[in-house]
Image (cartoon, rainbow, N blue to C red):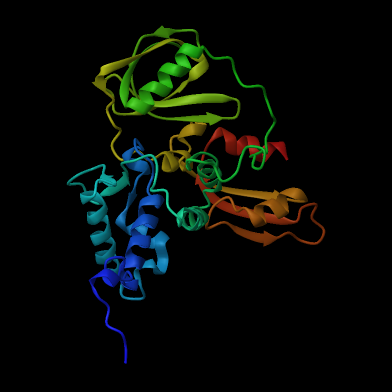
Amino acid sequence: MPMRQGPSNLMGYTPPMPAAHHSRIQRLHRLEALLPKPGTRQAQCLDGARLVEILGQAYGDGSLTSRRRALQRDLETLVKEGRIEAVNPGGKPLRYRRCGDSLEDDALIWEYTLRQVRDLIAEAIPQRQLNRLWERLLHEFDEPLLSERQLRVVPDTLRLRPVELYPAVLQAVISALAQQCALKVSYRNANGERSRPLLHPQAMVQRGPIPYLIALKNDEDGLRLYALHRFIRAEVDPATPAREAEGFDLDQAIAEGLVDFGQGTLIDLTIRVRGYLTSLLLACPLTDDQTTEEEPEDSEFDLQVNARLPQAGQLLHQASRR
């Protein structure tokens, strides 16, 4: 006959957590870990469609509509708990980022970390954004998964020494970007002409040895590139929020040739290649719609490569250096 449990036997008893509830807790933690850290600009934050794409089957095998509804419920839960926030309330689509710098430390943290790595890979591989993946592995986590002694990106270009910069200028530029404030500057262009514009920083990129600030100037709407070594002075204007360029996306700007001083004009490129460049362009196409044709047997080249891409100086440089 089974023994009945009295009150004293029940006091230390904790009912097991339902499997579905435990699974959802794990999923919420995974979703939170996937989102960018606090302060990330709107263009770099993730929306529901991208999150469903990255998380794959975490929301079951149902229809895309049902998975999106389940994801939206999770996002709303995390928002109510103050763990994430929508950076563009009322916008379409809503984009999200984390509210806190660190995630809950518990026995499953390593499992969550590994899942986060898998999610980062799922985000980077389809878009071929390996550079972003390397950066996030080095810097996104409280304790980087890989140190700079274990991971380093070596550019396939002539390695020039970086330009000399004024430390105060660099600090002001970084501060303005982080605080999303305007920047008062004294700037000397390539012709030696000086100006004192009010800049609205959007992003900073390094092309070769030279870092550039992408910014709006005064009340103008067009994006401009400013070489940091040409700044004579820079001062953060905390009282003036930086205007955000409509629809600005750093990856898209790079793809369209803005960082290479292009204007987004597309050209049809046809080149003949041989040797190292043949294997390189077969493994790393210029564009997704690149086509190749084998050269005749008596040709000095292996392939003819055809692609449509932005006209830019870097393109001409790469084509002429091989």
